[in-house]
Image (tube, rainbow, N blue to C red; front, side, top):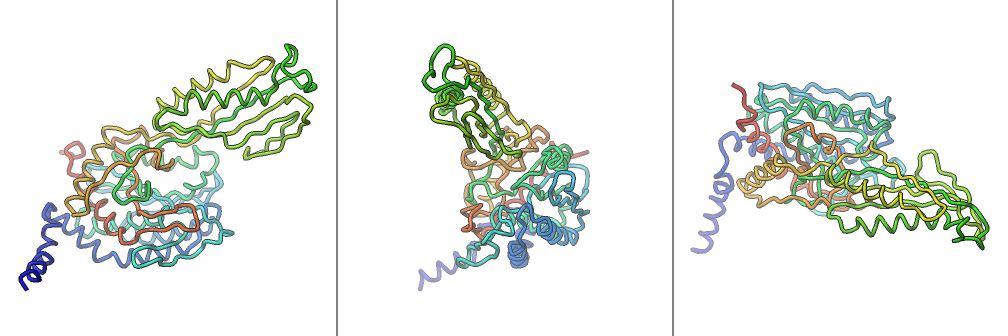
Length: 438
């Protein structure tokens, strides 16, 4: 009986210990999220069951209008922009102008990788805490967490103490063209903000956030050689041909750069022969040749991912040096498409947010939080805030597994957890001296 009584006592006092490090405003945030968690989960289920593959413009806008209605209720000024100029559905943009002080940018996206022809269209429950569904983790769960956190800040009377701009893009999974127009609203919002918070799900773990993301840039290697009968290959007049030269270059990339930490480069496809026909969108093509003819042309397309602009520039220089040292009777040209995703480098500001976030999580009784290894998180919209804000982190969304597959899941028992962490983070950031105004 004494043992049972002791455990009953622990159950009675545990809420006190869990919130002992929270002030009264933060306790109000927690209370609001607990009260609105059920409605948030219903919103998540409803959004997941709307197909919003990037190229399903009607579906993307339908999800945007679903979230728009929720933000309208909270007093945000909202709009669904037109994406006609860059061939996409457009973005949801919501703004709330508060007292002078902290200016926040919150980033989500409305689209998924699952188009109308995907076999994966509906949500289902794996168990009491795991929802399976298209986009539940990437990233409708994160969008719902944003809305739940905004509700909590409003209920606690704190929303007016900060200015918040929310950008939920309609083309994160398959960016519009040109990219400069596709991401213009996001970049402009970043220029107005002090802090950017991304609600992607990082590496899928609720105990992590992203303080650095690698950028993604594409490259093209074009090689030419002397076409001739294969019996003359390696002679001074004919040389090695285009395929051998391309092979030398790719091997050089691997030998010189493969051990560089957080840097990856991948040749996605290669075409070589007497003639090469590259598709207009450069996603592939065809090549013709004969076994007894030295190859005249080779084209290779790939990507490169770096954790900082400095690392990217260094890698580009090394690659160009390798390309310039040609085999006999060959020429090669390497070009980069700098319209890709820029890297989001780790900064003192991102580490400061990690420190805040970890402390908040422990104050809430949710345990420690640590940074994601950049190799375990791909490029994302947060990267377009690079150089424009004082602080930026990502990965504040819903944990789960198997993103971009028909087995994608989200841990719905963590929706409230993530919303509490995020809302209190915004509140504590608003109290930092550097964001206060006299």
